[in-house]
Image (cartoon, rainbow, N blue to C red):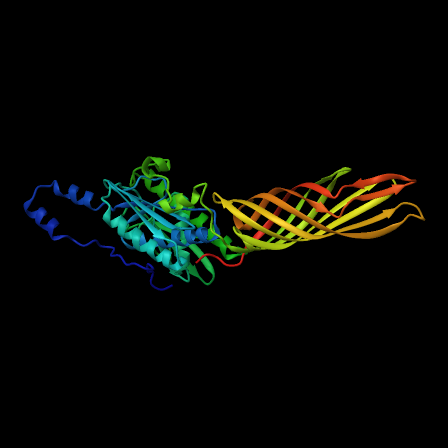
Length: 451
């Protein structure tokens, strides 16, 4: 099978003997080892990451969750799951304007990272987080059992290690790279496509010949990693129960869950973001292309008719834009069926309010196409054309991934008086002036993302 080795760190199975301990054993009283044992308690770090509901921030959060956990473990800290008591609590909040890193020990430090290239932001967060953990004064050390992860064979994959670490944290297990005898060592061995898992004491090496549980095959890599995590947590729990029953371990203290407000203040955007959120501030103007569908009513003297249509728009999400719109108005009366179409060119100006609100004011000009068909074998049919002018006012909500919902009013003049006569009497009549109500949805696609 070969030698079993830890990836990314090394450790000695025999702890070094401090000269102070030798001197204390010879000259000092027997009370010294307790102080040494307390000093050996590793500082614990609670790592918490949050992000706004945006694609780029969410991807950066997932990447940083793996890299930050690995960096803190390499630096010798015990990383505990979110909500657990810890010597230092780190909170990283990501949004469209950058990142906010806060560290809480016996004191508090908050730093803000400006938006920029995601790789640069990630590197700055990594460096700043590890620096803040070192700088803030930690609370008193908190003893907590932690899992040390050891991979062997084909399982020695950095990405697999990071994903296992994140998965164990999400399931409530603390992690370490410097284990004590009371810590469980999780051994993952891959040989010839087979994955095996077993657990031993933290001060012992993994033994390839040890009876281990096998991870079942799966259709996808992600599914097999979930099965691997299930087997790993089951093995850790079984080992802990065995040691507790034999009296070698004290019962593990449950994780102390606390609300974020107890130790960490909710991430507050920097002042520049609050200014943008102000009602008078206008959100960023992004070039975009929008496709929208709408339906509603068009009212004229003579009656109100249902209408539906489609609009294509290009321009600024908040700013000047233009496009094409088609509205179709079907109707009927005794002896006649009418379908009207209003193809128009549209120019509008969109104003933003808050983060997601949009108010647009537009003007349109085009044709009024009036198509009719009278009943009966001798009934007349035909098409009439006339000019059409109008204005629109719309209020909309621009949500995640470009989804838009809106409602609005339109008013205008279209084609003059429209009348159909049957047996000398008007059966269908509409005026040239119209007022319409519409509701719609659509998608607004940005042309480019902000750097």
